[in-house]
Image (cartoon, rainbow, N blue to C red; front, side):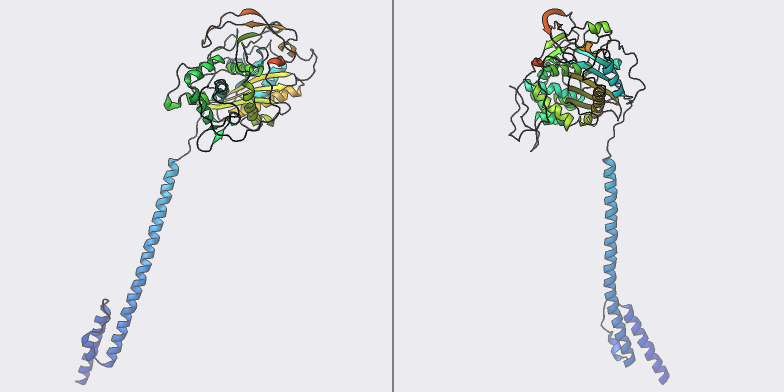
Length: 486
């Protein structure tokens, strides 16, 4: 009987402990536990303590779970950010222009007529071009004679977009209209100012777009035609084709007249048109018809022909400092990698159209024997650009210098004296009724004017604007004036 009572008590205690352990919402012992013996009470206390630890552990677990969720959320957010950045990177993929034209050729001289050219000048031009697809034209600015023209097919072609070489025409137009001077600082936005010298040296597009808009299309076109754009540059040059200056500006959505004045977009210019303009700058304003003697007899009987006089003599020196800056510290400084024996001024141009890239460089060299003008024009792909044309021009001058072309030589070593006979040569003045006419080639009319030329293609000092002797130092900052016509 006593054994049965004891068994019942133990069973009751075990049941109570089981109920307490199963409950997690309270730590208060069950009322029926007070009637139990001492041993079951200890078990109830132990069970209650276990519940408290479970609550603490539960809280800790909850914290851990929260941390895990936070970590997972952070990882998810990080993954989303990386994915977003990856998508953004893909969206911002850099545009790479693709070119279809080749920058190289096996022979630049096929079909050239060379009997009346200066052989030393020609060979220097051929060596400088090498296997680059392009043309090189060397001109005596004192009379308009083409001393050498390599790859005549390309030189006489309709030309191409002039790229940044158009800035020479725009700069002269803005100076002529009194819109800027060499020292004028033009505000291009915020605290950014540039002078004409700096803009020419660095070939700044925004500066010349600003000048173009200030000039307006009608005045830009007037000066372009006056300086020979839109006209044939040569006289009696078989095969010469016309570079065209449009009668209307390109659409505003494409940049309008500003774009035409920075890149020459919408304009077609030939190497001969550019050469004739730069030759006029070199001699003080006489725009000659370019002539290419086709035999030694034609070279010996060469007679200069003037197309018209340009009123630019007072503005050319202001252009020269920027053109010198281009060679000394600007876009054409690659020329000095090959040559630095005497001053060279110039202007580069780089642009592309329909898979073909163009590289221009027009230069004036102030040699010991006089001045010489060159135009290097390259066509092709990625290796073709303006600074490359400047580099090749440096090789051209180096070849002439190394052959002592600019020093005393006898007539047995060269026929270059045919370039500019020492005796007075009559100048042929061509009649031009309309400077805007693209095809007007009236027969030249003999005048009584004469021009005296010295040996080695030098023009009379009286008409030659002085070249800068040193690198031009930009002026101190001044307040930006309003751009307005004179």
